[in-house]
Amino acid sequence: MIDPRLIPAWYVLHTRSRFENVVNEGLCKKDKEAFLPRIQVQSRRKDRKKMIHVPLFPGYVFVRTDLNPYSQLEVLKTIGVVRFVGNASGPLSVQNASIESLKLMVSTDREISTGLRLQKGDRVVVVKGPFVGVQGIFVRYRNLNRVVVNIEALGQFAGVEVDEDDVERLPSILV
Image 1 (spheres, rainbow, N blue to C red):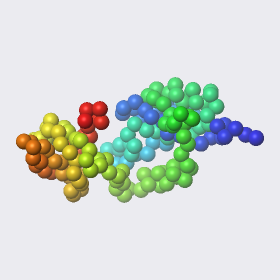
Image 2: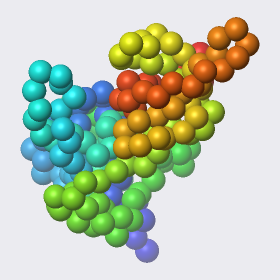
Image 3: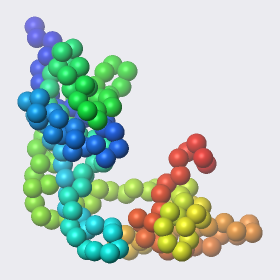
Image 4: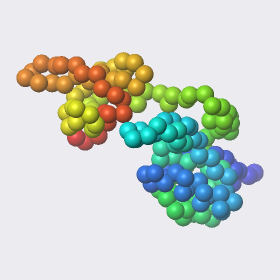
């Protein structure tokens, strides 16, 4: 009987911040099958409008490998790799069908939305624009790339609409 850990499967790697491309290239140089789904978005820079490719899942890269100790160590020694994504039992595999679906999605030139980033009730801070530094509670998505945030002042709430890119969720530690 063959140990299931010795059968190649797709796994998710957590990478250092903004090291997705480095990890992808490093794995390819080691003859490992890697997949970094990228989408095309408009640059956030104010001085120019340019379309750029960014990772669909920032901080993550998929790799097809088996889990024998040598292969696992070789993957983990790749520059920028933090760890395999998994639980106490070890790395968790991703179904081939999911990877194939992702490959099909990113191969088209249609816009891909990655789902809701914020949930109603999340504590957020405004990081850009006229309300920079203001903390509040996320209420809802308004229009494309617009969110409504309630800001508490004098025991009352005032709602303000800001760009989605101008707010960040506060870590639960700071709440």
